[in-house]
Amino acid sequence: MSETVVLPKKFRAEEIVKVLADLHRLSGDGPVTLDFREVEEFDSSTLAFLGHITDCFPGVAAANVPEALAKAEAAFVRRPDGCWPEKPAVPPATGRTDRFLQGMSDRFLARLRVLGRFLAMFGDEVYHITHYLRRRKGVYPGEIWNQMFFMGYRSVPIVSLLIFLVGVTISITSVDQLKLFGADIYIADLVGLAMLRELVPLMTGVILSGKVGAAVTAELASMTVLEEVDALKTMGIVPEKFLMVPRLISITLVVPLLVAIADAVGIFGGIVVARFSFGMLPKAFLDQMLNSVDWTDFAWGLVKTVVFGWAVVVGAGFKGLTVGRSAEEVGRATTESVVLSVTMIIIIDCIFAFVLY
Image (tube, rainbow, N blue to C red; front, side, top):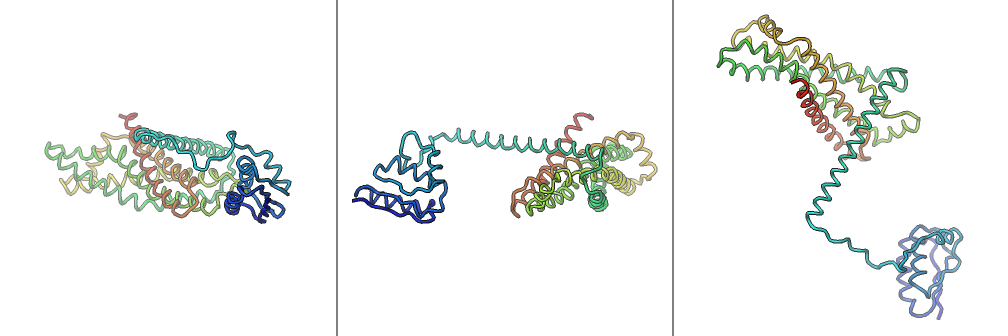
Protein backbone atom coordinates (compact mmCIF):
# COMPACT_ATOMS: atom_id res chain seq x y z
CA MET A 1 0.00 0.00 0.00
CA SER A 2 1.39 3.39 -1.04
CA GLU A 3 1.89 6.06 1.61
CA THR A 4 2.17 9.80 1.08
CA VAL A 5 3.94 12.02 3.63
CA VAL A 6 3.25 15.76 3.30
CA LEU A 7 6.28 17.62 4.52
CA PRO A 8 5.90 20.74 6.68
CA LYS A 9 6.38 24.34 5.56
CA LYS A 10 9.67 24.66 7.43
CA PHE A 11 11.75 21.59 6.58
CA ARG A 12 15.14 21.77 8.29
CA ALA A 13 17.30 19.59 10.53
CA GLU A 14 14.80 19.36 13.40
CA GLU A 15 11.93 18.30 11.12
CA ILE A 16 14.17 15.98 9.08
CA VAL A 17 14.89 13.86 12.16
CA LYS A 18 11.18 13.23 12.64
CA VAL A 19 10.62 12.42 8.96
CA LEU A 20 13.51 9.94 8.96
CA ALA A 21 11.94 8.15 11.90
CA ASP A 22 8.66 7.89 9.96
CA LEU A 23 10.48 6.59 6.86
CA HIS A 24 12.16 3.83 8.83
CA ARG A 25 8.72 2.84 10.14
CA LEU A 26 6.91 3.00 6.77
CA SER A 27 9.58 1.74 4.38
CA GLY A 28 8.68 -1.91 4.98
CA ASP A 29 4.96 -1.46 4.19
CA GLY A 30 5.30 -0.38 0.55
CA PRO A 31 6.33 2.60 -1.58
CA VAL A 32 6.39 5.98 0.15
CA THR A 33 6.00 9.40 -1.49
CA LEU A 34 7.38 12.56 0.09
CA ASP A 35 5.26 15.53 -0.96
CA PHE A 36 7.24 18.83 -0.98
CA ARG A 37 4.35 21.08 -2.06
CA GLU A 38 4.14 22.80 1.36
CA VAL A 39 7.88 23.26 1.81
CA GLU A 40 9.00 26.91 1.68
CA GLU A 41 12.01 27.01 3.99
CA PHE A 42 14.95 24.63 3.67
CA ASP A 43 18.73 24.60 4.11
CA SER A 44 21.76 22.42 3.44
CA SER A 45 20.41 19.69 5.71
CA THR A 46 17.48 19.35 3.29
CA LEU A 47 19.92 18.70 0.45
CA ALA A 48 21.67 16.09 2.53
CA PHE A 49 18.29 14.51 3.26
CA LEU A 50 17.46 14.22 -0.47
CA GLY A 51 20.80 12.58 -1.22
CA HIS A 52 20.33 10.20 1.71
CA ILE A 53 16.88 8.95 0.71
CA THR A 54 17.96 8.53 -2.93
CA ASP A 55 20.84 6.27 -1.93
CA CYS A 56 19.41 4.44 1.05
CA PHE A 57 15.62 4.31 0.57
CA PRO A 58 14.90 2.82 -2.89
CA GLY A 59 11.16 2.67 -2.20
CA VAL A 60 10.86 6.37 -1.32
CA ALA A 61 10.11 8.96 -4.01
CA ALA A 62 9.97 12.76 -3.85
CA ALA A 63 7.14 14.74 -5.46
CA ASN A 64 6.51 18.46 -6.04
CA VAL A 65 10.11 19.36 -5.22
CA PRO A 66 10.62 23.16 -5.45
CA GLU A 67 12.69 24.26 -8.43
CA ALA A 68 15.40 25.92 -6.32
CA LEU A 69 15.75 22.81 -4.18
CA ALA A 70 15.84 20.54 -7.23
CA LYS A 71 18.65 22.56 -8.84
CA ALA A 72 20.65 22.55 -5.64
CA GLU A 73 20.10 18.81 -5.21
CA ALA A 74 21.30 18.16 -8.76
CA ALA A 75 24.62 19.83 -7.91
CA PHE A 76 24.89 18.04 -4.58
CA VAL A 77 27.84 15.60 -4.38
CA ARG A 78 27.01 12.34 -2.63
CA ARG A 79 29.34 9.87 -1.07
CA PRO A 80 30.76 7.47 -3.68
CA ASP A 81 29.95 4.46 -1.53
CA GLY A 82 26.21 5.15 -1.24
CA CYS A 83 24.55 5.45 2.18
CA TRP A 84 26.06 7.60 4.86
CA PRO A 85 27.43 5.79 7.90
CA GLU A 86 25.12 5.73 10.90
CA LYS A 87 28.08 6.27 13.28
CA PRO A 88 30.92 8.74 12.81
CA ALA A 89 34.27 7.30 11.96
CA VAL A 90 36.51 6.80 14.98
CA PRO A 91 39.85 8.57 14.61
CA PRO A 92 42.82 6.24 14.77
CA ALA A 93 44.20 5.80 18.24
CA THR A 94 47.49 7.53 18.93
CA GLY A 95 49.94 7.14 21.76
CA ARG A 96 50.48 9.61 24.56
CA THR A 97 53.82 10.68 23.09
CA ASP A 98 52.26 11.39 19.70
CA ARG A 99 49.49 13.46 21.28
CA PHE A 100 52.03 15.39 23.34
CA LEU A 101 54.22 16.14 20.33
CA GLN A 102 51.21 17.13 18.23
CA GLY A 103 50.01 19.49 20.96
CA MET A 104 53.43 21.05 21.29
CA SER A 105 53.76 21.52 17.55
CA ASP A 106 50.29 23.10 17.35
CA ARG A 107 51.17 25.55 20.12
CA PHE A 108 54.51 26.38 18.48
CA LEU A 109 52.87 27.06 15.12
CA ALA A 110 50.18 29.18 16.78
CA ARG A 111 52.84 31.28 18.54
CA LEU A 112 54.75 31.56 15.28
CA ARG A 113 51.67 32.91 13.52
CA VAL A 114 51.13 35.44 16.32
CA LEU A 115 54.77 36.53 16.01
CA GLY A 116 54.31 36.98 12.26
CA ARG A 117 51.24 39.18 12.79
CA PHE A 118 53.11 41.22 15.41
CA LEU A 119 56.09 41.82 13.12
CA ALA A 120 53.73 42.71 10.27
CA MET A 121 52.03 45.28 12.49
CA PHE A 122 55.39 46.70 13.54
CA GLY A 123 56.37 47.11 9.89
CA ASP A 124 53.03 48.78 9.15
CA GLU A 125 53.57 51.26 11.99
CA VAL A 126 57.01 52.21 10.69
CA TYR A 127 55.47 52.83 7.25
CA HIS A 128 52.52 54.80 8.67
CA ILE A 129 54.77 57.07 10.75
CA THR A 130 57.04 57.73 7.77
CA HIS A 131 54.02 58.51 5.62
CA TYR A 132 52.55 60.82 8.27
CA LEU A 133 55.79 62.73 8.77
CA ARG A 134 56.01 63.31 5.02
CA ARG A 135 52.39 64.32 4.35
CA ARG A 136 50.89 65.11 7.77
CA LYS A 137 47.58 63.45 6.93
CA GLY A 138 45.47 60.67 8.40
CA VAL A 139 45.97 61.54 12.09
CA TYR A 140 44.09 63.92 14.36
CA PRO A 141 46.77 66.45 15.50
CA GLY A 142 45.22 67.13 18.90
CA GLU A 143 45.52 63.46 19.82
CA ILE A 144 49.32 63.73 19.88
CA TRP A 145 49.17 66.43 22.56
CA ASN A 146 46.62 64.43 24.55
CA GLN A 147 48.83 61.36 24.50
CA MET A 148 51.93 63.39 25.40
CA PHE A 149 50.09 64.77 28.43
CA PHE A 150 49.03 61.29 29.52
CA MET A 151 52.25 59.41 28.76
CA GLY A 152 54.66 62.15 29.82
CA TYR A 153 53.27 64.57 32.38
CA ARG A 154 51.16 62.01 34.23
CA SER A 155 54.03 59.54 34.35
CA VAL A 156 56.53 61.93 35.96
CA PRO A 157 55.42 61.42 39.62
CA ILE A 158 55.45 57.62 39.60
CA VAL A 159 58.69 57.44 37.58
CA SER A 160 60.43 59.96 39.85
CA LEU A 161 59.34 58.22 43.05
CA LEU A 162 60.32 54.72 41.97
CA ILE A 163 63.64 55.72 40.40
CA PHE A 164 64.55 57.71 43.53
CA LEU A 165 63.85 54.65 45.68
CA VAL A 166 65.87 52.47 43.32
CA GLY A 167 68.80 54.88 43.55
CA VAL A 168 68.61 54.87 47.34
CA THR A 169 68.41 51.07 47.44
CA ILE A 170 71.36 50.54 45.11
CA SER A 171 73.45 53.04 47.05
CA ILE A 172 72.65 51.52 50.44
CA THR A 173 73.42 47.97 49.30
CA SER A 174 76.65 49.03 47.57
CA VAL A 175 78.15 51.38 50.15
CA ASP A 176 78.52 48.66 52.79
CA GLN A 177 80.56 46.52 50.43
CA LEU A 178 82.71 49.45 49.32
CA LYS A 179 83.46 50.36 52.92
CA LEU A 180 85.13 46.98 53.41
CA PHE A 181 87.81 48.00 50.89
CA GLY A 182 87.96 51.68 51.81
CA ALA A 183 86.49 52.63 48.42
CA ASP A 184 83.54 54.67 49.64
CA ILE A 185 84.10 57.39 47.06
CA TYR A 186 83.49 54.98 44.19
CA ILE A 187 79.83 54.89 45.11
CA ALA A 188 79.48 57.86 42.75
CA ASP A 189 80.93 55.89 39.82
CA LEU A 190 78.72 52.93 40.56
CA VAL A 191 75.50 54.93 40.89
CA GLY A 192 76.27 57.05 37.82
CA LEU A 193 76.98 54.15 35.48
CA ALA A 194 74.19 51.95 36.85
CA MET A 195 71.59 54.69 36.62
CA LEU A 196 72.49 56.18 33.25
CA ARG A 197 73.06 52.93 31.36
CA GLU A 198 70.92 50.26 32.97
CA LEU A 199 68.56 50.97 35.83
CA VAL A 200 66.84 54.13 34.59
CA PRO A 201 66.06 52.75 31.08
CA LEU A 202 64.99 49.37 32.45
CA MET A 203 62.83 50.69 35.29
CA THR A 204 61.30 53.42 33.13
CA GLY A 205 60.36 50.83 30.50
CA VAL A 206 58.79 48.54 33.10
CA ILE A 207 56.84 51.46 34.62
CA LEU A 208 55.61 52.52 31.18
CA SER A 209 54.52 48.96 30.42
CA GLY A 210 52.36 48.87 33.55
CA LYS A 211 50.97 52.39 33.27
CA VAL A 212 50.93 53.32 29.59
CA GLY A 213 50.82 49.86 27.99
CA ALA A 214 47.88 48.65 30.07
CA ALA A 215 45.93 51.87 29.45
CA VAL A 216 46.53 51.77 25.67
CA THR A 217 45.50 48.12 25.48
CA ALA A 218 42.32 48.65 27.51
CA GLU A 219 41.36 51.68 25.41
CA LEU A 220 41.94 50.05 22.02
CA ALA A 221 40.40 46.74 23.13
CA SER A 222 37.26 48.54 24.29
CA MET A 223 37.06 50.33 20.95
CA THR A 224 37.40 46.98 19.18
CA VAL A 225 34.69 45.32 21.28
CA LEU A 226 32.32 48.28 20.83
CA GLU A 227 32.94 48.11 17.04
CA GLU A 228 34.42 51.61 16.91
CA VAL A 229 37.42 50.21 15.06
CA ASP A 230 35.06 48.65 12.49
CA ALA A 231 33.38 52.05 12.14
CA LEU A 232 36.76 53.63 11.31
CA LYS A 233 37.32 51.00 8.63
CA THR A 234 33.86 51.69 7.21
CA MET A 235 34.76 55.40 6.90
CA GLY A 236 37.92 54.50 4.98
CA ILE A 237 40.29 55.24 7.89
CA VAL A 238 43.17 52.90 8.66
CA PRO A 239 42.86 52.13 12.42
CA GLU A 240 46.51 51.13 12.74
CA LYS A 241 47.48 54.61 11.50
CA PHE A 242 44.75 56.74 13.08
CA LEU A 243 45.06 55.17 16.53
CA MET A 244 48.68 54.06 16.78
CA VAL A 245 50.71 56.82 15.10
CA PRO A 246 49.82 59.52 17.69
CA ARG A 247 50.78 57.18 20.52
CA LEU A 248 54.10 56.19 18.94
CA ILE A 249 55.02 59.81 18.20
CA SER A 250 54.04 60.81 21.72
CA ILE A 251 56.10 58.12 23.43
CA THR A 252 59.09 59.08 21.26
CA LEU A 253 58.82 62.74 22.28
CA VAL A 254 58.20 62.29 26.01
CA VAL A 255 60.83 59.62 26.70
CA PRO A 256 63.82 62.04 26.61
CA LEU A 257 62.18 64.22 29.26
CA LEU A 258 61.30 61.21 31.42
CA VAL A 259 64.84 59.82 31.12
CA ALA A 260 66.42 63.16 32.04
CA ILE A 261 64.19 63.52 35.10
CA ALA A 262 64.72 59.89 36.12
CA ASP A 263 68.51 60.19 35.79
CA ALA A 264 68.56 63.31 37.95
CA VAL A 265 66.28 61.80 40.58
CA GLY A 266 68.16 58.48 40.70
CA ILE A 267 71.55 60.21 41.09
CA PHE A 268 70.03 62.45 43.77
CA GLY A 269 69.07 59.31 45.70
CA GLY A 270 72.71 58.21 45.55
CA ILE A 271 73.85 61.66 46.74
CA VAL A 272 71.50 61.49 49.73
CA VAL A 273 72.80 58.07 50.79
CA ALA A 274 76.44 59.12 50.32
CA ARG A 275 75.91 62.28 52.34
CA PHE A 276 74.29 60.55 55.31
CA SER A 277 76.40 57.36 55.17
CA PHE A 278 79.93 58.78 55.21
CA GLY A 279 79.49 62.55 54.81
CA MET A 280 80.38 62.84 51.14
CA LEU A 281 79.50 66.30 49.79
CA PRO A 282 77.22 66.55 46.72
CA LYS A 283 79.92 68.43 44.78
CA ALA A 284 82.49 65.72 45.46
CA PHE A 285 79.94 63.07 44.44
CA LEU A 286 79.22 64.78 41.12
CA ASP A 287 82.91 65.43 40.39
CA GLN A 288 83.76 61.78 41.00
CA MET A 289 80.80 60.59 38.91
CA LEU A 290 81.71 62.82 35.97
CA ASN A 291 85.17 61.28 35.90
CA SER A 292 83.71 57.88 34.99
CA VAL A 293 80.63 58.73 32.91
CA ASP A 294 80.14 60.89 29.85
CA TRP A 295 77.41 61.89 27.46
CA THR A 296 77.52 58.56 25.58
CA ASP A 297 76.26 56.75 28.68
CA PHE A 298 73.28 59.09 28.81
CA ALA A 299 72.76 58.73 25.04
CA TRP A 300 72.72 54.94 25.18
CA GLY A 301 70.28 55.03 28.06
CA LEU A 302 68.05 57.36 26.08
CA VAL A 303 68.18 55.15 22.98
CA LYS A 304 67.32 52.07 25.03
CA THR A 305 64.36 53.79 26.67
CA VAL A 306 62.98 54.95 23.32
CA VAL A 307 63.18 51.40 22.01
CA PHE A 308 61.49 50.14 25.19
CA GLY A 309 58.73 52.72 24.75
CA TRP A 310 58.13 51.61 21.18
CA ALA A 311 57.99 47.98 22.30
CA VAL A 312 55.42 48.88 24.96
CA VAL A 313 53.14 50.85 22.62
CA VAL A 314 53.36 48.43 19.68
CA GLY A 315 52.73 45.45 21.97
CA ALA A 316 49.78 47.24 23.60
CA GLY A 317 48.32 48.19 20.22
CA PHE A 318 48.72 44.66 18.89
CA LYS A 319 46.87 43.17 21.87
CA GLY A 320 44.21 45.86 21.78
CA LEU A 321 43.42 45.62 18.06
CA THR A 322 43.38 41.80 17.95
CA VAL A 323 41.24 41.27 21.05
CA GLY A 324 38.18 38.99 21.09
CA ARG A 325 34.67 40.45 21.19
CA SER A 326 33.87 40.17 24.91
CA ALA A 327 34.55 41.99 28.17
CA GLU A 328 36.53 39.00 29.44
CA GLU A 329 38.87 39.24 26.46
CA VAL A 330 39.54 42.92 27.23
CA GLY A 331 40.86 42.03 30.68
CA ARG A 332 42.87 39.13 29.33
CA ALA A 333 44.38 41.30 26.57
CA THR A 334 45.39 43.97 29.11
CA THR A 335 47.18 41.40 31.26
CA GLU A 336 48.87 39.80 28.26
CA SER A 337 49.96 43.24 27.05
CA VAL A 338 51.87 43.97 30.27
CA VAL A 339 53.47 40.52 30.23
CA LEU A 340 54.43 40.89 26.56
CA SER A 341 55.88 44.37 27.09
CA VAL A 342 58.01 43.38 30.09
CA THR A 343 59.24 40.28 28.24
CA MET A 344 60.24 42.31 25.19
CA ILE A 345 61.98 44.89 27.40
CA ILE A 346 64.10 42.22 29.08
CA ILE A 347 64.99 40.59 25.74
CA ILE A 348 65.89 43.93 24.14
CA ASP A 349 67.96 44.90 27.19
CA CYS A 350 69.92 41.65 26.88
CA ILE A 351 70.59 42.41 23.22
CA PHE A 352 71.85 45.90 24.13
CA ALA A 353 74.06 44.36 26.82
CA PHE A 354 75.73 42.11 24.24
CA VAL A 355 76.23 45.08 21.92
CA LEU A 356 77.55 47.54 24.55
CA TYR A 357 79.69 45.23 26.68
